[in-house]
Structures are given as structure tokens and as C-alpha cells.
Image (cartoon, rainbow, N blue to C red; front, side, top):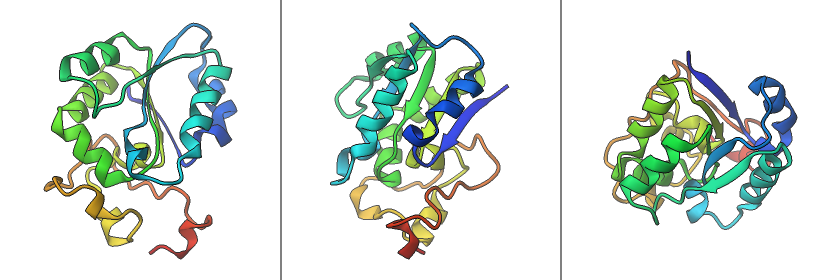
Length: 173
């Protein structure tokens, strides 16, 4: 069974995640992937998400994909109880996930029953592709010049539109 917690802003719904998890979180580990935020000038949500996880009792293990090897990432993902992917630029995130095969690692961990928390871009990549994000001009694709394939993890059969109707995203689309 897939256990996915998809949201726009994790810090805003962290209490719902505690109920969703249905287990004691204190002392559990979460692989925290902030990669999508690297191209963003506004990224307060990364710190807010991390604080919310820590407040829930989770031990946060940062997994910056651009800085770690395939084997290091694999080891952390395998050893963590949860996987968390922050928001930011969807295309840059997907590009970096694909470069080291982390997209496949995450999909495999989810299929094995590990809970996945996806915030904004981290939620979007669960769909079969991210072409729709390009179509609505949600994120600039030029932040991912090496991305040639917009297929994503394909673990849900719908498309997530985070922040719909919220400023500053209200003007997008």
C-alpha cells in the first residue's frame, strides 16, 4: 500500500500529518530532500517544514541530491522511516532526481511501504508527468536545462495543483 502525504505547505498541515502517520514519531528518521528549493529566492518553507518535522519528534537527515553520491543517497533513503521532498522548482527537482536515479529509488521505497511526504513540487512529481506544470507556467523550466523527459514518478493517477488560488500563484496559468 502506498502511503503518500501530499500538500502545498507542510508547516501549515503538520498536525494533520501527525494524525495521518498513526504512530509515535519521536525518534523516527526522515530523509529531508530540499533540492527543489535551490533555484528559488524565496525558500522560507524549507526551514518551516524542517522545524515542523522536528517539533513532531522526527530526526531530520538532510539529503541534498546535488551534493551526495548515488550510494550515499540510497543508504539514507533505505535507513530512514520517512521521505520528505520540499517545494521549489518542479523541473529542477525532477532533473536532479533523474540524474542520480533518485526518482527510481524513491518510487521503490514507496512501493515497499515507506511513507512519502511531498510538499508542492514534491507532491507534483508523484504524477505521471510534469508537462501540465509547464502548460500552466507554474515554474520556469529554464531552471532545468538538462531535463529532456518530463515523465515523473507516476505513483498517482491525478495531477496535483498546489497553491491553487493562493498569492502569488493566483496570477499563474
